[in-house]
Length: 561
Image (cartoon, rainbow, N blue to C red):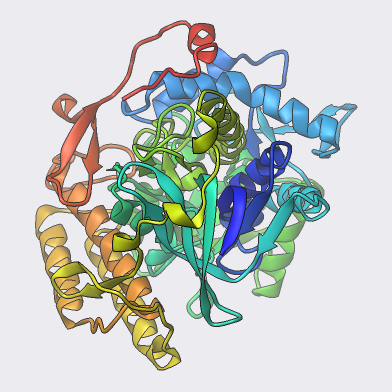
């Protein structure tokens, strides 16, 4: 048993930043599935989008986000992001975070969907690494924070209405450990590594989505998986992300004949929103012999490229490509736009359970994430989550301000997974190393299914067959006892179903979801798709009211749908 004021699962920017803030109010457990540097945040290249220039305004950032979201952004959430984002950036700089400078001012980049230069970067193309390392130094030197690496979160402990903590499996010790606390913040990242071709770390397979779903959280908009248009194509190695900022500096996309194809498709050409660029590349690949297109940079000053993108340039050289000429690229699964539905203060429908970062569905991203909004969302809603935790405690009786072993819901505590679902039985969680290969093979098959049947271009026949294949995998998956590989396999199956069911429900094409049998946007589908354990799919209206931002900011109890 471990007792903390705050239990934070995930070591990306959201987890690190919220842990650092929470340490001002109590003891914090920071739990991570692998090493503290293994996260999407750490490998982020592009930067952070925030208004810091006198020529820019939050209203402009708001409009760019709304346009990219293709009608599904909740205005209140976007308002919070663009107005509070600059404050969080300023605080980071005051704390000592160093972003790249030019002529005594912040050096600002341009990326797809943005109409102003507002992308802050650090170390050129290693912004994620720089800001994550900065926060790791803060966290590791804070005596109020205890870090638990190689701990897998296996269940959210609830009494049905409120969260009491997490059950975790200690991979190093080979044992279950219980974390109890007043507040639990999940920042476990996305699910794009459930696809075959992905820019994500191998650990990003949607564990947080499955955990929250099993606990009874509402899961929103899982049909929207964003494929990054330009990952370095390779036959054997994992795709390597080529930042959107490269196109922001003027790189062109050309087909195997050397012809540009984006100017004819969108007024912003290579800087069109990601869903449009990814789909355009996909179609070019389908119409040619090569399984990739080229990103050409020969017309750009090579010194500028080396200075701005040192890491990408080096990686290309290691792979045998000249970054100053042209490199082969193809789309890869990159970002989970949907996730666990939260309000403006990161609250879920389960009391004392908060979700932030890529795992959360705040309503900001809509149908398609605007480039570099994700790291900003980590800061803004990580901050709001911690502040809301403290506000929620101030009005509670003393007896409700701490969690003890007596609060454990024994009847839900030990459970077993069988083919028909979950049954309550006394028992002990285990890990059987002999099942690792079986799990690996299941993971590979699911990644193939999602890539083929729920990829960039979808239709009813593909999605229906894909769901049938997932059910076939589920029927053949051995579940004997409450064991780690059982749970991990079940998680993959849950996430795959959520993606496909939501994609099948949406009879239109919008943002990161393209149905060739419904190729146009349909106004009757301007809603969020909600999935909850034991319930039929429901929908929520999109909030497009332009209420006064400051009124909401001063009302901590304000909630959107």
